[in-house]
Length: 273
Image (tube, rainbow, N blue to C red; front, side, top):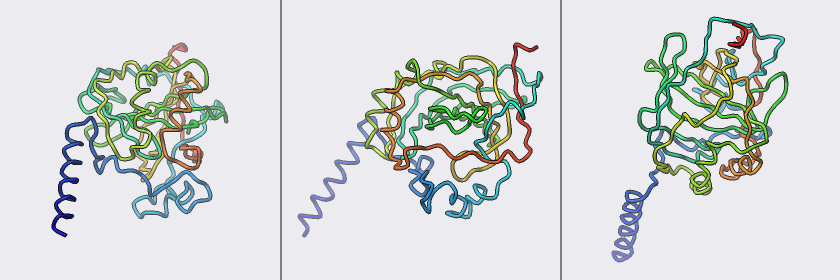
């Protein structure tokens, strides 16, 4: 029995040393695999039931400012005061993690920021949803990237970039090998070196702006959304790669559309001013 215990101890020590010497670390609580909820409509853990799974997730069911929404030309308000979103990004160390429902790229150093309404939001992470969560005039696209920024007071600003099938996306091409490598490594965080967020293309400076929520539990309504009007492209192979690397049986990791509830959606087009 003592011999078995000694072997078990040595195996545990070997595993710890392996993690310490590799490019992988175990996921922190912040990056916990979101196995408690799913995107399967008929599941007890599906989108319609998120607000019932945990008390602190009740906003998913009871909130009035939920995301995503349809961005219809009929309800947008043309505005001139918003101005171009200036992305003051810079290269920084980053990690990738397979959270089960999505792949998340997190910057660990100072990757720069954006400024909205005189508030600075630092770039924190980006992740991808397929198909797109937001729709434009009722049309759903193939992919949506969320660039998540946080202010010092805890507010969140997300830049959303929507994609359709076409030419390959350069930024995703740079992450290809790392994304594939994490296919079966749930809750493992991999160092991917220096990643330059300036390589994420947004196409133009036209965008929709509205006040909404996180699109995953706890669905907190603390998000300023900036959805870029220009639809970018990814290749079919890149879309397939992103879907194959995550473990979600529904075939989708996009939350259903939420009611706009009389909210104002603003639209900024610098060409009009």
